[in-house]
Image (cartoon, rainbow, N blue to C red):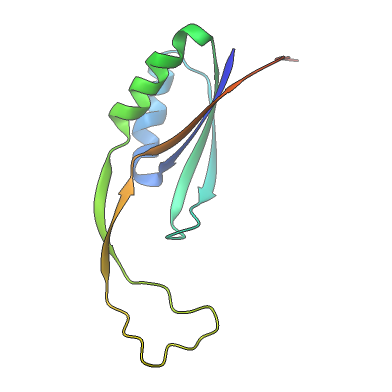
Length: 109
């Protein structure tokens, strides 16, 4: 058995959840926040049989697309931005960060 943790952008979460449920996966969905852009993410925890991991990864790959987004850089942590012009920059967001871990034991009560 495997535990798959997938961190996806909020824009992709509803479609991904529906597709996973339709495919027979049981998922736990949690709200999370990204550290770089401090934007909303969704973290899915999915327990599945070893034989279904490739199917699961294919679904996540197909539903979570990366996209380009223009963001304003954060000011410096000490508040000193003298001589520093904050120009918007284009970054790639979205897609999915996925961790696949072995499960030694699973109990359901």
